[in-house]
Image (cartoon, rainbow, N blue to C red; front, top):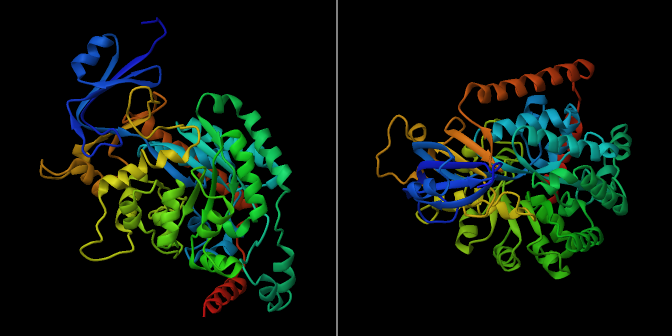
Length: 497
C-alpha cells in the first residue's frame, strides 16, 4: 500500500451490481483511489485493506449511480416562467418568455438535486443563451455540474433547417396576417452556424475542458438537435467526424407524431428506416424521446446497437405519447432514462422518474407489465452506454469507476413493507429523493445525510432565485404569443387530416 493510496470500504445490507437478477446479501465493495478494487465478503476485503475507511449500514441497498441520459440543465422549468405544458410544437413557440439563466447557476442547482437522488452522470443537451458564446456557456455548465458532484456529457446543438415549422413552412407563413407574417418569418434563422464553424466550436470546447475530459468528469458529443432540424448532409459529415475521434452523436428524434409525419412526407418512410438506408444508424448514435417507433424501427435499432432514451415525464407533459417500453424490454434494446428538465413534479427527482418510466407504458391489460429490474438497468448499466468514454460504468465491478448510491431501504419501506418484498421492485415502486443516504462519483462523495449536504440544495436554490429576480426585474418575460400559438396548433391539427 502506498502512502497516498485512499481506500474506502462500503458494507451495505444488500448490493446490486447493475446487471444481476437479484440484489445480494453479504457483499461489500472496496474502493481504491476512485475505482472499485474488489467486490466480496466484508471480512475478506477488510483483510486486503485493513486501514480502509469503512461505511456500513445494514439498511442500505448499494447500486450503481444513475445516468440521466437526456437533460437540458435548465435549473428552473419553463412552467415556472409562464410557459404552460402543451404539445411540443406549440410549446416551442412560447419559449421566448424564458429568462437567460447563467449556465453555471442552472446546472449547479440541477446537479445538487440529482446527486441527492443518486445520479452520477448527466447528458446535457445545451440550450444556448447566446450562439456566439456557446464555448463559454458549455464550460460554465461543466463547472456547475462538477461543483454539484456530477459527471457531464455536453452536447452543443446544431441546426440547419426547418426552424419553427417542420413542413409546409412557406405555406404556413403565407397564411399569416400582417404584422405577424413579417415578425414570425423574420425571426427564422435556419442555420445557426456553418458546419465547419460547429466543428471548430467542438474543438475549442475540448481544449477549454481538456483537464476535465482527461480526468473523466466531462465528455463532448455531437448534437444535431433533431432529425427534422438537421440535413442528411450534415448528419453524415458529423458521423465521419465522430468516427475519426471516437465520439458519439445524440439527437432528439420522433418525439411527436408530427415529426413522424415529417419523415413520411420527406422520404416516404420513417426516420429510422431512412437513417439505416444512408448508414447513419449504429452504436455511435442515441435518440432522445423515440416515442413514434414502429416494429421495423425497433428491430433496426436492436440490430444497429443504437441507444434509445425514454423521457417519460416530458412525453406526458408535452402530449407526445408513450415510449414502447414493453417491446424495448422484449427485444432487450439498449435504452436509458432522461428527465429532460421536465419531471412530473418539476423537481429533478430521478428516483421518481424511474416510477414514471415504469408505469407510462403504452399497453394495458394482463401482458402490459414491465420488469422493474429492466427499468433499473436502463438507469444504470444500459443507460451508461450513452457515453462514448464510459464515464460512469453503470455497474459495480472491479476496475470500474466508483460511482454508486446507497439507498436506505427502511426509508423506502416506511411505514411498512413485508420483509420478503423484492427490494429492487420496492425501490422502483416507492423511492424518491430523501431515500438516498450516500452518493459517490469517482470515489468522491457528492451527497450525504449530514446538514451541509442538505444545505447545498437550499443554497443553490437561493442563488437561482436571486438570479431570476434580477433577470425578471430587467425583463418580466411577458409576451403576447396567443395568436401564433393558436395558428400553429391549428396548422398541425389540419396537417394530419
